[in-house]
Image (cartoon, rainbow, N blue to C red; front, side, top):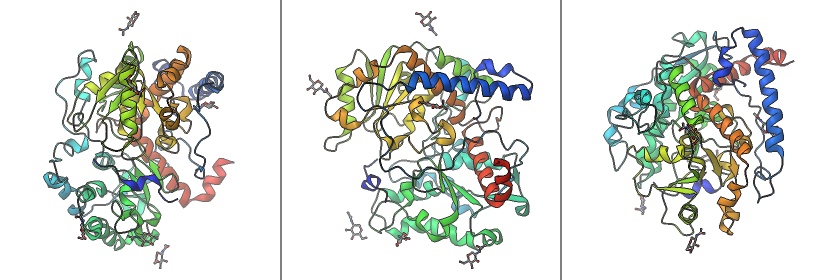
Length: 482
Ligand SMILES: *[C@@H]1O[C@H](CO)[C@@H](O)[C@H](O)[C@H]1NC(C)=O
Ligand SMILES: *[C@@H]1O[C@H](CO)[C@@H](O)[C@H](O)[C@H]1NC(C)=O
Ligand SMILES: *[C@@H]1O[C@H](CO)[C@@H](O)[C@H](O)[C@H]1NC(C)=O
Ligand SMILES: *[C@@H]1O[C@H](CO)[C@@H](O)[C@H](O)[C@H]1NC(C)=O
Ligand SMILES: *[C@@H]1O[C@H](CO)[C@@H](O)[C@H](O)[C@H]1NC(C)=O
Ligand SMILES: *[C@@H]1O[C@H](CO)[C@@H](O)[C@H](O)[C@H]1NC(C)=O
């Protein structure tokens, strides 16, 4: 992978999930009340615990100075239980926009075959067995899932969605199952022309604009899932990075789910990167939650990542910090492609640590953040943009409740990460971890076909449907809010 400069300046539940104890509350009316009380209680406690300003360096200081306009985002819950937010029509696109890309998986990337990555409806190959010490019953729930496979996973899940309709006239929303990330991937890293990088996207939009249900709305009730970061589709000058798919005029009204959103674009919603855990039932999920909750962690923090051969590389600095504190930090060196092809070493390191360091990657966000949280480890960010204004539907909009922020400048100036992390009391760590674990069911992607518990996909689609429904019937929505 390469470092690309575009990212520097892109121009400028509440569904409380399974604490096992909560599940026994049966009567829904009481349950509502009960949950509200619990929520209120948690808020009070968190206020007390986390609201106390920490003395150490600029942790939790002001959010982005140049803060994007806040969005009226609310956490979706299971609003769409009876599809009252409407139905989705899934376009049956010409195969060149999805199936053919998968069939030609050996050509998707200039260096390696991507056939494993796109297999199994995007879940990837099932792992053989499970790491020693993890619950063996969960072996069938683990896959080597590729970080950019979301497009395929969303498509497979959408086809089976309970609110899918094959009658466009009945639809509130239109889903476009174009694998834009797969289509552009091989053109990103070599000297292809702008025309080549844009070809699939351009063809797709031409096809779409000929459809009768497009003409009715010009795309304002359409949505798409982009498996790569938004920055890969936002080229504005020919010589820049990526395709210009999102820049094309027909895209102007289409809602986009993607793994990293542009915080200044209200038509973008970021969704979690897929991790390798795909529970097949609620009991799989509960087993895992219980496992990470009771895990005895032997390291204060961990750093998983590769060093880059660039001047004053921040990741190299973190790695050096970690080696120097080897009694409390564990390093997993992922230089080269060491961590690509499936290794349990990464997950084990997270499972053994209270905190995990999450510098930015090629983009601001990282799949690793979700791997870390899946293991019940608390993420430590160095860029606000790695977490603020991202994933609000899944992790809430208050990262300070479940993560630590240390300004990278302080680290560069010699601040000790260990000292900052040691400054958190056991109780504070416990609170943050509890939050992290509470979010796991919201950011994992269940095994396709299991709909025991709402997962990241369900929350994303419910949110999209709700939003499009309100957009179509603004009067109703206002009434409801009053
Ligand atoms: C997060 O913490 C803040 C105080 O720091 C509190 O006001 C807020 O309610 C908390 N949010 C959640 C979802 O617990
Ligand atoms: C990339 O291609 C363009 C035109 O096709 C050419 O002018 C340019 O020199 C090439 N750059 C590299 C680094 O090969
Ligand atoms: C869609 O766009 C076309 C061309 O700009 C315009 O003529 C038409 O009125 C638009 N339709 C809707 C429903 O906005
Ligand atoms: C992208 O959009 C900007 C502004 O709408 C436009 O000036 C530019 O030409 C577009 N770039 C491409 C490659 O289409
Ligand atoms: C964790 O450590 C405690 C105390 O050493 C022990 O009682 C407990 O059984 C351990 N838990 C696990 C899951 O190993
Ligand atoms: C780690 O230790 C080495 C040797 O003592 C030192 O040169 C280096 O600056 C230290 N790195 C950090 C990040 O503290």
